[in-house]
Length: 369
Ligand SMILES: NC(=O)c1ccc[n+]([C@@H]2O[C@H](COP(=O)([O-])OP(=O)(O)OC[C@H]3O[C@@H](n4cnc5c(N)ncnc54)[C@H](O)[C@@H]3O)[C@@H](O)[C@H]2O)c1
Ligand SMILES: O=C(O)C(=O)C[C@]1(C(=O)O)C=C[C@@H](O)C=C1
Image (cartoon, rainbow, N blue to C red; front, top):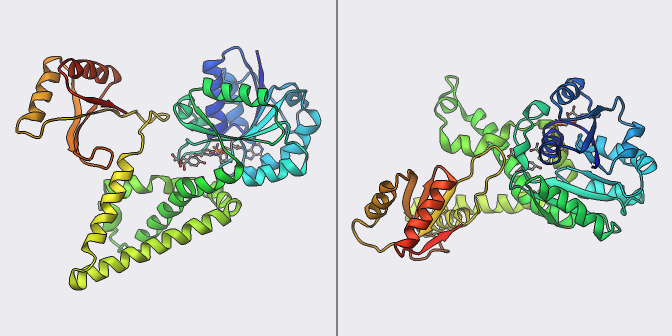
């Protein structure tokens, strides 16, 4: 049995607490949060066992792990007190989206032997305990940035705790983390927000743009609805990496505009435009789609298929005879599968497993991803 403390019980703190309750029902969970409604709801639903009335509650001294899940400046504020009261062996961790700033404070305070930075690469544009969900962590990478003096056994134990919640732990340095997330998380949020603001400016009084904006715009801008306070903080905390990656992005946009202008004037650079879309399609298609939180997993298989009329129909018939429903089917071309392969998507894992067995039995070459 372990005792786990939470300071901050919003979207991420709540999701981790719910996952701990699900996978370790015997663990004792204590929490402090600014909003008392969240604490009351967590207590009455059995997610937590005890409420701490204050951020500096001595009961955090009984914890094996303390998760700091409040806004970063609050997490920073908690460290010195936790250093004083922590029991031997207690690991303090956080979930902040930027790691450099908290490690700087941890070093200043001499806590590099008891702090393991954390960052679940999962979440949502919503905030607060009400939107937390035990499934948010499922199959999500969970980055760990251990302080330089944390004992290996503690790193191992914490990694196992994270794995036991359904997440995939990955250890990085704080510097690596901040560089990587600037590209794959922070820049996308800035792009989404800038695009929405641009459309808002361009739209007419009748709001035609807003009205007809469809899948493309919606797919790329969901995250523009995220918390402005959190993203303001992230931009400030990781400003150097974000500024560099924005420079690269702006350069790329200028290049694209040049290609489009040149192509429109005399057909030059038509190929550059094609290559841009082809290369992004290949890379995007090569990204694993995993079951990440409440978003359903894509159950997909790929198989070699002879390039002849009726090839797809034959496979569809084989599957239909076994009552296997297909969600999507089509030939795809990318670098990984140079010759092109058939991609089949299913609604359920069981259907995919049965399809794999059936097709292999008929000597099709099946690739599982
Ligand atoms: N939202 C995401 O997708 C996401 C994903 C990974 C990591 N993170 C990181 O997680 C952290 C929390 O983000 P969130 O999305 O859970 O936000 P949230 O707003 O849902 O939760 C923050 C919680 O902290 C509480 N809080 C605010 N001030 C406090 C104070 N002074 N004392 C105690 N509690 C206080 C709030 O009441 C709230 O419950 C941030 O550092 C963020 O960078 C967010
Ligand atoms: O899915 C979302 O809404 C997210 O934005 C989650 C997301 C991201 O992928 O950028 C946002 C911030 C976090 O620090 C980690 C994950």
